[in-house]
Image 1 (cartoon, rainbow, N blue to C red):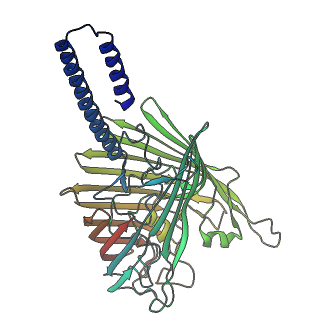
Image 2: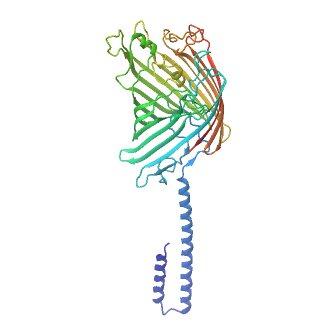
Amino acid sequence: MHSYTKGLLCSTAAAALLASVPAQANDMNEMRAELQNLLDRMETIEQTQSQQQVAETSAIRTNRTYLRKRAPQMMDHYRPYDVRDLYVMPETARANGVVGGDLPGSFKVPGSDTSVSISGWLTMGAVYDGGTSEGAFATMGHAGTIQIGENHPAGGSDNLTFESLSNGLAIGSSSETDMGTVSTNLVFVTDAAAPVLVDTLSIGLLRTAGMSMSIGNWTFGHQGFAYTSGSCYGEVVETGGAPCPIGAGPAIQYAGGGGGMDYRIQLVTPISTLDADGIDDVGGVNIAGSLPDLQARISRPIGPMNFSLGMQLRQFGYDNNQDTTITGASDVSIGWGFFPEISLPMGQDTLYAGLSYGSGARNNNINHSLWTGGRGDQATVDPNTGNINNTITVSLHTYYTHWWNDTMRSSIHLSGANSNMNDLSTAAEGFPGTGTNAPMTKWRTVSGNVVWSVAPRVTMGVGAVYNSALFRGDNTNSNDSNDAANEALEGHYRVTVSY
């Protein structure tokens, strides 16, 4: 209660006293006592209200604060970068009118209503290679680094390497308009790319992992593909990440929901990647489809389980580039795939399983895309007929994450795939016995780790990874039924600091 209110009450009381002059003196004394008592009570009420207001203001400020997670999940090379797992956002924050920006860890640009957030992470790791995995400095983490052949020129057995890979910087913005929320997402990531002089100069390449803008339900720009939900990227210690289906590139997306179901529909830039040797045999070149690739994903809960289904449909092919001096051919094909996933929360633990099936599909899984080296990943060309033969690839991915306490957890991953490309696709000519550029027909990966949070922004982990890859025509064998698989066992240590 303000002082002018008390003054008004005092003036009113004084006027009442003047109007009652004929009253007895003792009555005047009683009125003065009652007036003083009233003023004392008003003062007490005013003090109480001030204290309550300070307490409420303090509580609101506390609720509006974005808190960093005690145990944020380790970021890796292949995880979709539009998913940030570094902050806890109170459910009431936006309704209370967030102090600062509208994004986790953000601030308002002075003189505007645009929120900007800056975050990122730095990593350092140690890797021990106990097999034919890699010989050169690691490229793009550790997915797909098994080399072909027992005596491959890259070598790589029993090596210890210190690495600083997958360091990232993420910048986001958000503002409200009549068209809905307008936001941007820009992510920079550094990767080592096998520099020749590792001992004197180890330069990390800077790439843009994501650069997209959203207007309401629409998203434009370089973004993760809808074929994968991101749920398959369980926490790993190895920099390369889990060998899940992966894809990112220029796309247009519309996302919405209704009736308990969420959906994403994307138009993705088309691309064609056929077996290089087969195309050379017919004198052709890759051509992208005349229509954009179509990808979509639907998601909905089924009881305690979260279910989602990714789909893709594409057109691709090759021709002789209208070169009349080359006797060539041309052909087009339709590729498709689907990727159902289930995730079952078990208290704080999580059980996940996903199965990708594709015929001429793209982005089936990380390991197959890298290990094939362009040999039959999506399709092959029959040099006798010039026809495109779609590659059928089936990959299974599952993991279980268990929390030992609020800062320590472990994950066990099992992944594998079988790929059936045309039998005419074998090792490249000139490399008998070593199988260089031979297509990969099978792979298996098993990994386990222990991860703990030393401090709210510091996460460490140790883990082991077993890889097995079978290449057609490898190790002097002539077909995939007799080939001996290449195996590798890696030990990893990693520390990550987020900001």
